[in-house]
Image (tube, rainbow over all chains, first blue to last red; front, side, top):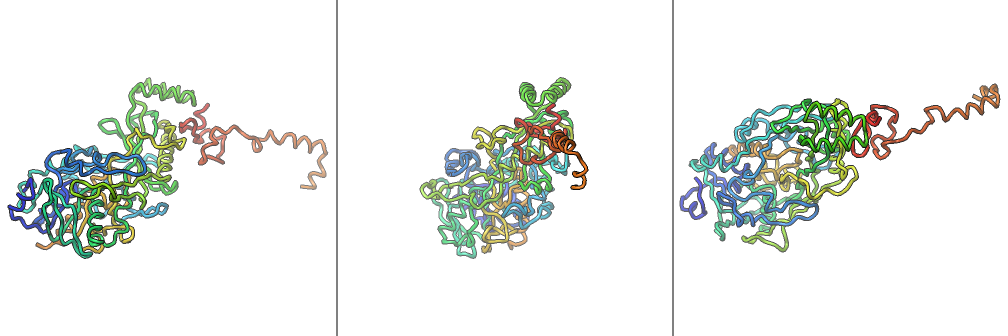
Amino acid sequence: MIFDSYEAYRAANFTPKVCILGSGPAGTTVARKLGAAGIPVVVLEAGSREFSDESQDFYRGTTVGDFYFDLDITRLRFMGGSSNHWAGWCRVLDKQDFEPKAWVPDTGWPIRRTDIEPYLPEVRDILDLPAFRPDMPISDDIRWVQLIKSPAVRFAEKFGDELDKAGNIAVVLNTCVTELVGDGKRVTGARLWSNGQDAGSFSADYFIVCTGGLENSRLLLWSNQRSNGGVVPNAAALGRYWMEHPTFEGGNAILADYNAFEVDAVNEAFFSPTLAAMERLQIMNFGIRLIETPYPGVKSLIADLACTAPSMAEWMSYQLSQRLRCAAQLYVAWEQAPLASNQIELSKTDVDHAGVPRIELHWKKSELEHRTLLEGLRLFGTTLIEKNLGRVRIADWISNGQDYPTNDETAGHHHMGGTRMGTDISKSVVDANCKVHGMDNLYVGGSSVFCTSGQCNPTTTITALACRLGDHLSKVVTV
Amino acid sequence: MSFLIKKMSRRAIVQALIALPALSLFRKLPDADAAHPSHAGASLADPSEIVEVNGWILKRSDLA
């Protein structure tokens, strides 16, 4: 059932056991799992069926530190959430992403990759994915990795009819929770805002917060402040350890043979470091995206090489005459070290239309990340030499240690951390089952529970974790 | 050692000292990659050595 207002929902006299906040990939997946288990669930979606400026305005905020996107641009507030603008790139976090890195503090998850692997067939159905394929080592340091470019499932489009017909799932549009109320053990209720006005209070046995990797922290910070610590009793890490995937053009490559490794339908290939290379250089995970360079760009690259290594340039020039495809741009996206100082705070001066403080995002890239970028390109360049595949040129701003450019990709619009999973209550917000520490009936879904970010796009892992959370709740919640 | 020196003529000792800089062990080769700390101390004469010049990651032999 889908209702366009809270009033219409109330008139239906539906009694849910579980209340899910948000209808993005995490919220929709948990709802479908609970519905399939016969558990009545209501999904409160802040937006309507379509994009609107009025709804997006609730997402405005400010960023302190490094340059970042406007916070009302980097996410979407309507049915289906940010699945409405994602690119559809899919890969599950690596096994090593779940393990602690001895050289980076606060890494490691309380679960292993094997804990989510049983859900991957289900994830493939949800996201319309082909089979996952294992990595292929190119050298001791570099592996070819599969990044699936899927049709980008829009969750409202794909699952809208199913949700509308489901007798035990109610989706309520234009309705959001402005504040959860808790007593330090349980969430006892919620304040609602619907169609531009206060809509009173609401209660359910369980609450699952799936409002996105920025908004989850915002709602819990505000609720906790209003309840004097009654919603997140152990709040030391709340809003902290926020992460993105910084993404920049790192240089170019001239390739002896573009067919030496597998490329996708648009002639792109992806590479990551081996665990041994990360350990040896004490760097984070990263992904190098190799994009075929148009012909004029190839010529100028070879001219540049001729100034440094004339014979090599001559040989490359010969290769170019033999094969029209022989150069590439190298885009690098990398894993950020989880830092408590990268955090979501509540604005002290600015509130949205419902009176909830807006986000003040503190985000800064560290020295370790610049080293990851530089050493990553060196690893890739060395691998191309070792395997006689080509040569790499690192962009000047990286070699010279200059500031990050502000006219580049910047980041992946991947909002991770803030309510991270863990066993140490001083450094995490939820446990291995995504339940808020110390609370009996409050759970969190989505990438805000990520402890570390890995290097790949998060939606596949978000969906796997949501399947796992849905399974867990269907055993915990009694009808 | 001192026995050897006693047996050598002064002329032979001087000639040996003059010849020392010509030995590769004592020769300072031009360093194309002094700015790359990870390669400091590596054998600079190795043609397969990885060097970084003007942003390019190359083999030393590429520079020929």
